[in-house]
Image (cartoon, rainbow, N blue to C red; front, side):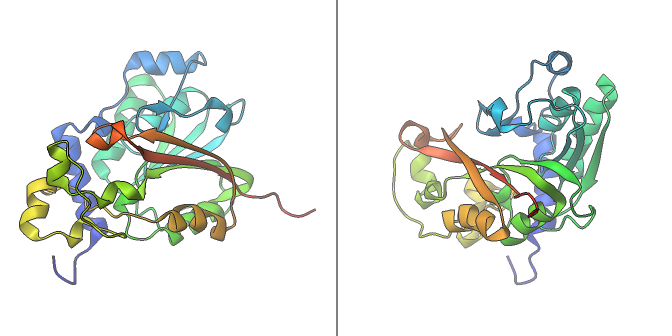
Amino acid sequence: MGDDFDPVAHNRDAWDREVESGNEWTRPVGPGVIARAREGDWSVVLIGYEPTSRDWFPADLAGVAILCLASGGGQQGPVLAAAGARVTVFDNSPRQLARDQEVAARDGLVLQTVLGDMRDLGAFPGASFDVVFNPVSNLFCPELGPVWREAFRVLRPGGVLMSGFMNPDIFIFDDGALERDEFVVRHPLPFSTLDLPDAERQQYYGDGPVEYSHSLTSQLGGQMAAGFTLTHLAEAPHHADATRRYMPGYIATRAIKPQDPA
């Protein structure tokens, strides 16, 4: 790919294709899930298939302003809206956002959808949200500093950022070997699928989204540098590849924007 490569445009088209192909993270929740959420029986995921602990959220979601960041697909946003939150879903893929709109229309939910790059939340004024909910997605973003700074800006004092991301160590392994259930250390970190030869990238990733490893310094340190205070951390195995038997493939964090000084 040339010097004029635009990762945002590429990944937008790639995720639209993932919707067409039925990727599991593009399949909307069913009416039963929404009905249960309306009764208070709800859960959403930040990492893999692990429900996010309910104590990471406000005790009562009624009226809580939640930004589902890079979270299209008709999954988390509609559930949180059914549980009483005022939800805005922000995503880079029009087709992913359409999934949220489909669920809202089907089940009579009120939620907003906004298209854009997760590094630029200029569509929202500062201090607009109580919660930013960001499931695993920043591996599709080339840099994280702007993401954390924008999340900090749009949160109200005392607001909560929940983020799920890939354990960067996952990226050191050779893709072909992993498919054979073998572990061959190949890639130095940081790594991007753009680093692969064209033929190999096509073989293992096709026209799918470009991925980027990000160090824990960028993930955890980046949140703290933006002003957040980390309060919780959780891990989970990768949901699909062979590493799940030996190491956590996902990490989730909960952080707060400190209250304004008295």
